[in-house]
Structures are given as C-alpha cells and as structure tokens.
Image (cartoon, rainbow, N blue to C red; front, side):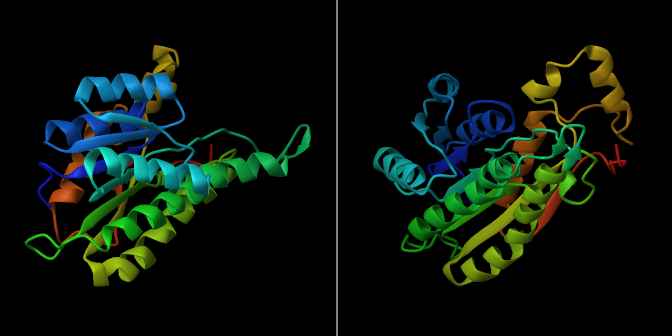
Length: 253
C-alpha cells in the first residue's frame, strides 16, 4: 500500500515506539491520529507532525469506538492501524508477599491483548466497506508483540502471556480479513531504547545492549518504525509475526 494520503491510527503514540511510528508515517505522507491516555504527550507529537491527538483507553469499548469515530471525522476512515499501546510491569507469579494480585495480571492482559483486539475489531470493521485500492487492498493492521511472547523471563508472566496472545491473534485475524483485502501483521521487538529503558543508568543500558548478538546495542524506535513502513508497503507480507531483535534470545532472567 502506498502510504501517502492515507489515514492512519497509532495507539500509544505519545512516546516510544508509537511516537516514532507516528512520525515516520507522517513523513511518508499519512494523515496520522495518535490515540493515547497521555493527552499532553499525544498533543505534542500530533502538533509536530500536523496530526490529531485523540484521548483513548484502548481497553474500553466505548472509549475506543468514540476515538475511532473522532479520527474518521478528522481524516476519513483509517486504512492503517498500528497498535503500540501497552504496559510491561515486572512481577513474579508468586513473590515474597505471596501470589500476584489477580487484578495486576488482568490489567496487563486488558491493555496489551484486549486493547489490541478492541482496536483491531473496530478499525477492521470500518475498513471493510472502503473502496479497494488498485491491488485490491483495503487496509493494513500492524500490532506490537514482543520477544517475550517466545522467551518470557522470570517476572514477565503477565507481559509475556499478553504478548503471546497478540502473536497468536495475528494469523487467525489475517485469515479472517483476507476476504476483505485487509492484511494483519505483528512485530516482536527485542530490547529497544524507549523512554523507560533510556531512564536507566548508562551502564545498565550498555549491559542490556551487550547481550544482543549484533548489533550490540539497544534497538532504536526509528528502526521499529521503519519496519512498520515496510509492512505497509509490502503487499505480500501477511499473517506473520516478525522478530526485530538483533538475533537476541532472552535468558530466563
């Protein structure tokens, strides 16, 4: 799909991978709507790319439905959806204080997995009646999984299972939406230099980067964004979860 002129939605676009993706899409000519609960951050990114910021709780049905309608009113129905909204708290299933509170697990699943599904179902529904493009395509959905979906570490049970769900959602969604010309993909990033990791001491960042076979550094959000652009451009990519990790395979801890 050619990106120029297309309406795009990026969830979690106020910072990190989402912000980099929003900027890359806008630089390629897309009309970008940034969905985030961080109103200030979303507004700042939107202003820098001449996009729009929409307050949205991706895990809430009504909030997401309203946000999708608001974005469509401003830019038209989206042909590109990039799901970047997510959280990643570390907590053991059974820690020193006993079992993980169930609500902590539920929160991660709600935002990372249910939020991805919620946005997917709403945006795909709006894509289906659109006129097909020259190649018969109506839209592209790219979600964010993680290498933790495959090699979850100790303390990552909630995060890993949520991202495993995102990975497992990708192929059945791609098969279902194939009849409408909507492709579905996911990217599984490794260790990236998001604001959370960049807040760590430089020695800690260097140690994390040294664990990557090559290149021995943290991934850059722009590299994630570049892969999103390729996913949109390459019409034969569909139903796949693509690792972006410098050949990293996570150890147990």
